[in-house]
Image (cartoon, rainbow, N blue to C red):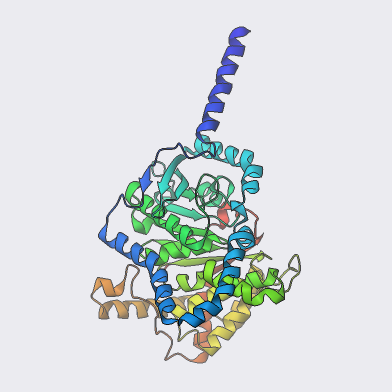
Length: 450
């Protein structure tokens, strides 16, 4: 009996030891990778330019302003700064609030233990260029890639504003069989710092470098998956590293300003717009248009978080008109296929976006008699023609001929509408779920490629 009790005590001590190893006091953990561990000319220079271009542009504008204008703007700047560093940050990134982490700590520790024990997860501390320590977890499936070779691909998961890798969006690609790299925003869980856009971008930069240069995944095998506000860092990564293989955006938005105005008092409009633009400029659509690779948008049909349809606490079934994912798709298609997305193309895609079920989509498709094979033939022939004209690999880009494509200028209005619908359906999929509902593994798909 004493021996049994002794063994149980040892097991308990071992579990406590594991829990302590993966507890949220991350300060004593050794650094596994630093942002400057790799001095690759291509990756380092492009990342450095992306990190500093915004600051350089802001500096140029500041120098152009006269002293009187700066003095007049000072009260507004102070008010904007105070809002951003208090209520604003708590609203935009509630997961960084200390009480939130404390309340979720038991669940987060259980999530860590589950990833380590069931999926052989490897925790690592990364140091970004701003000195913040980034908490990551890597699940490697390359030894057992599965029948479709999914484990050979790495999915980097970018969580939402209250998401942690321990219990966040990485569960869908992980259960679907992919290798997965999760990380926490600065100020979330074991990561240090505060989750402002520049800090988030710096964290994403070191995460991508870690995946490419320490985990040794080829860029074309790396998929970036962003859920909700994670769409900002996901699009930043693919904009800065255009050689990455694919981008999946789930329940995200085009711009934070419309969503911020929805929840704040109307009398605060000027202050809210200024605060978002100066401190939380999550320009997802702008960054998305800078990525030339395959993209898939997942739009949730019961999502009231990224919708501006009134101020109701929940959406009525089928109310998709205010979903900001619609604007994200329109911006992407208008950038890539401007001739196709002329007045007729934009109008028909806007009507198609109101469909909230597969049955409605099929009916809409049938009404316009979209011929998938004909559309594919048009796109492929245009691509081949461009590749023949462009022999320089740098001009052609890592994913083929650079966008925008001028395809569609000689097409009739009817053919343009059909091609616009075909492209919209290939770039956006509906998922019958709320904003915070975990994505089912079968709903996680890789983007369509020509």
